[in-house]
Length: 134
Image 1 (cartoon, rainbow, N blue to C red):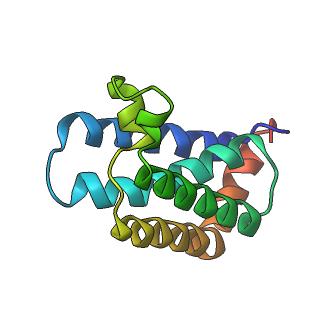
Image 2: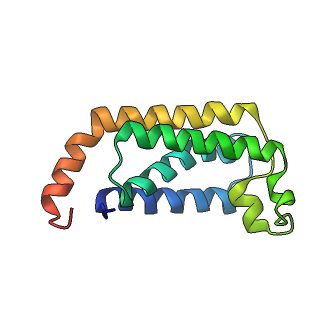
């Protein structure tokens, strides 16, 4: 385990963005698809904040987790575990299965892999060299 401030900042930013979308956006594109696209990036940055797994291991793990949650939505997991009356659980876990969500999750992970390969190294190196806690 470790704490990485670079990923922590991204986690906080993405979390705030997701909360904003959940509270203030009620449309047919941003909330369902951009929200799903961003949530895999949020989970990725959260994992990388605390664990030193490789980029590919983390990305594949997050994608598998996201696919699993989507499949569980197909089987009404929120209701089955007795949390159907919890709006928080319904928002976090989700209640509606959609094949299109698999595309949003995959595109989010592709974005992560591209950002890590082409953008991340220069930003992380600058950020890490400025922060002795890394």
